[in-house]
Length: 230
Image (cartoon, rainbow, N blue to C red):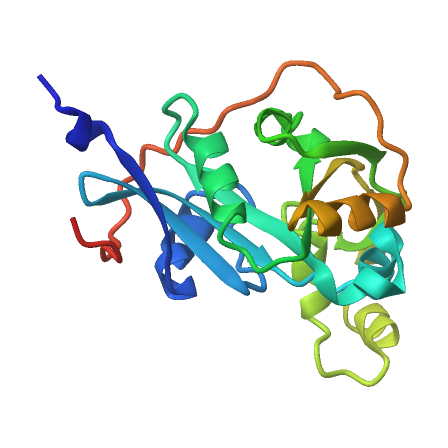
């Protein structure tokens, strides 16, 4: 019979490279992202999940949440991947946020196109602020399986990136509508800081969305070094 110690889950800061195998091999996006803070969940010395936070590259996003006063306080929860055991995801998110600097505004998205609703954010008391803005992504015919940013990265370093893409790919290069996502926001700070950040929020808080949420197979073993000593 398992003891309480064997079932205990610990969440600790980890080097970003410790999260890489999970991000690249288990997360559906299969691509790296900017990581400022990374945390791992461990049970009996084995990593069972990771969550990462990074500064959004989009200036309009950083400004759009709570204005210029909080532009440098925005972090995006940009990767979350863990075993499917009940409550592990919400435990990992909740405990990791408490280890972030104060004040911080955390934004995260649930990808509707991937069958995500964002129940983990609802369980950890994020505010729901509606759908992301309508946008377009670069795309190439025959390469639609690639993320829009991956396509854009093909032109990295070019002076006129759009013109370079049109010259290289011709009519195969086009714009496609980006699927909208559920947007969630969390304020991390002391009581006074949270009150001020809520007052600065530029989005309208809406009721939580509902619906079926798709789960992914995360049983593929990951070789990773433990960053927590038991």
